Image (cartoon, rainbow, N blue to C red; front, side, top):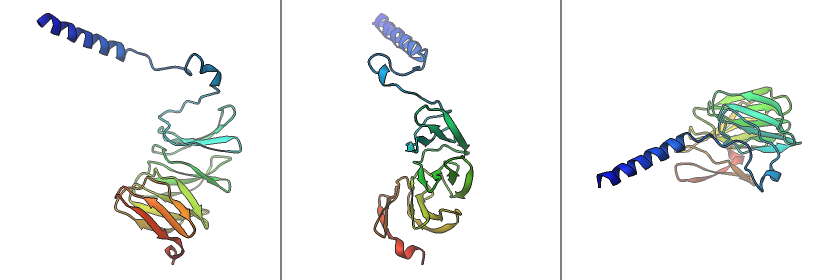
Length: 197
């Protein structure tokens, strides 16, 4: 009995050692899938941000704190913009400006051609929500429980609405109403025509 237990322990220990010494996967998968591989680009962290493409340029954020613009055909870097937190939000582009949030609590507006900051707006917590634009206002949620609307040109706050939970969802606008979900278990609908009054 003792010998059997000892053998089991040895098998477990050997398995752990072999698993820990396995090198990380390198390159695209081998075999029949090789022909489908085009390019890849390494960042300094996990890439949880969904990318968007416009005019053959792909835009996305990384958990290394940077936001990237790459040539969509070659994967070559065009520019990168540094924040002080993970960038996991879905970017949004409007009139030559790319908008995105960061875990450094700021929402950024950056020139899509040059990567130069136009403005930034500070909230009280990380921003994982995507954004949209309505009547010249950029609208997005924050983990600080608020939905914000800021002027798309200046970054000045126009209005905000508080819920009882963090906001991860990207807002939806239909007609003159805005819809968004919160971690407080509720889906909210607001009348946009009255929010600025």
